[in-house]
Length: 367
Ligand code: G6P
Image (cartoon, rainbow, N blue to C red; front, side):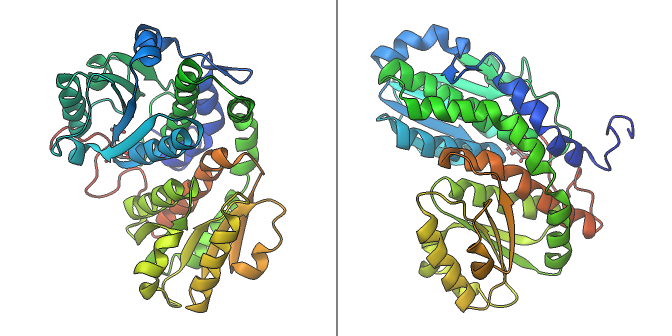
């Protein structure tokens, strides 16, 4: 097994570090000079052009967070209605899908029972289903009208890492393809896709932050709770940060839309309850800033991930990590390795095995 880990202590660390290659593999042949090429949906192109009125995203766990990021993307760049639900809710809620709906199912394993039952219901109601998966021939893609495989190579660590970023990249390419077929692409979207093509290089830089992240983990490992906050594209990242921390380090963590703090969660904050802020220099930066100030006024310690060059963060947060500047829609990709490495380091400091968290399975095939 040591050989399989390629010199890393754990599969999770190996897989986090594989993200430059994994992302490259995921987009190869699918994004070319800012143009989306998704041949996997050729058979439903006519449907997309003539019938598509609604997209419904269905997934669980980390895949759901990739889906939520996709929802923000589609909401911003297309006029198509987009809805999302975790699969265990979707399957019991009489979901509003019909023959004009495209269901986008996301499942690393392709075997998650709730997602599988969800797409079966969607198909019965006449919807078209396209699945993003990492496992060739698995059940969910086989039962879908189209399947886009992530090509990242197997993911052994129970906590999803490289497949999360691959999912976001593919979903953006898929979204751009749908926009091209329905409304037409614009330069901004092409720019985002070009940004994804540069991501493997950017990742090499982001992964070098591990030493600094390790230091932060040493300081924050003592806490029993952590609140992740973000807005807009930063919100799904906050949810994923919180999920990663609880999954492998067993520290209680919650993700909130930063604007919701004042409606309840802020009551929890004090010097024992730190905040992990997703605060890139984007269109919601000023709003996030006020939320950080509110948190600081309650004596909460703050770790912030922000954009390189944002010197102001030194006054706003106790600790900070800076990532390369990118397009607003791409911060979920740029920041993902940071939240992953933070959780990984905390788990290791707590002497836990991040590859095999208690009570969790890589693929959940029973309800
Ligand atoms: C399990 C795993 C998670 C994963 C979720 C969904 O709970 O522990 O890491 O995100 O299932 O899995 P899927 O294979 O459908 O993406």
